Image (tube, rainbow, N blue to C red; front, side):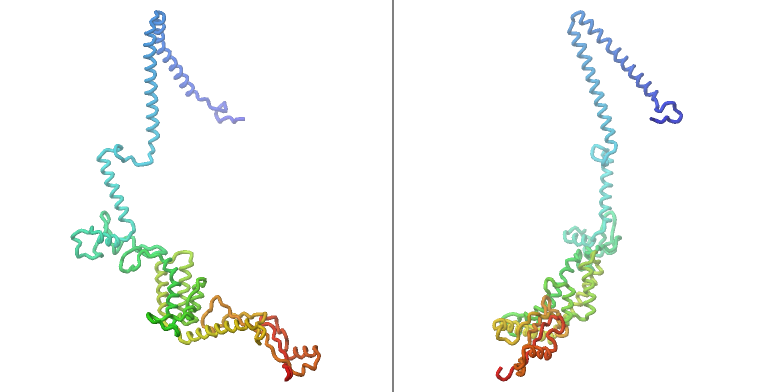
Amino acid sequence: MSRRRPGHFLPFRIPFFRIFYSTTYTTLYILCLGMLAIPPASMIWSAIQNQAYQYVIMIGGTYILTALIAIFIYASRLYTNRTVLAGVGKAYIPIEDGELGRSVRKMIVKQLERSAIVAWESRPRDLLGEILEAETVGVLPPEAEGLTRNDYTVGREISVDPAHPPWGHVQHAGWSSPSHFEENSTPNLHFAMVIDELPNLIEAKAVALAPAEETAVPANGPPMADPVVADVLRRPETMSMRDYLTQLSYLGLVNPLELGQRFLMQYERARFGSSPVTEQEFHSLMADFSELLSGMAELDAAIIEQIREQAGEKASALDETEDDDASLTATSTLHSPVTARTAPSRSTTPYINQNLESEESVGSVIHQVPPESKDRSPTEAEEASIADSGSILSMETDTGSVLRHRPSSGNG
């Protein structure tokens, strides 16, 4: 149920004026049409009575043509009004030819060109690069001969000194400044590309320190590097920069050690940080990198000799292993079923041997049984053997069991 409005008897409002206006307009409109239709109707009726049908066609055609012209004019007015009202809020500025006068149009175009020039000249950019380009193309004025690059000012509407631009020093994180001034030796340099190459440059410097091979004497050209030492100095693909610098530090190529730690911290920040490095951080990183390469001057002769000795021992051990496999039943030193794996010892190995594990095969050490054990029973012999050996398995370790047997008599 609708609620009654305050101050009204009915719950709704009756538009009396609209009803009066509509009723009066409709009544007058019908009355006007009726009075306009009486003369042609009377004339057509009289022509029909007199059988003058040509007048019927003439009068009817005239009125029909007049009605069509009136409808066309009324529709064109409606279309024009609707089009003009719809175009009131334009999405563009009406300054094209035909929308404004010629003088107004010319003034607007001139001011728009000036605004575009001001917007460009106030944009931060490399002004010295524009001067260098102008020198290359040859668009500098003739009176500019004898002037240096720092004597020019750039701009037609806004005069800007290239040495002291109003926007200051342009720089972006991860990139060097695009300016071509003498202080900026590497314009538009992407720091990430240089940082990715630092491990390769350090490896190239380290491998270059490998001594010449002693056995090979080349006929022409420089001597070949020792492949054993070069292999130690080389960085595998899967080795990180931290492990590689640790390996070089054991070889005595990082001098001083604090420099390697400082460079490593800056490198990891620049290489794996969440944000690009700034120009100042990049210059600090490259300064430490240059100092790190300068410290890699020479590989110690004692370290080189130790690397060669270890390589020779390793080759000999491989040869002995192949011989032992060929005569497994006749050897006195057999591979134990349990192999002891120990980490590389830094005291004996001055470098990190990556991807290799030190393996020591602790075989069963066989000793001869003493002659008196033959007269004992098997149980007594086993007990004596256990007493002499101390214990067959001392603890659960990876060294295996050591079996001790007493030597036999002279006939054994």
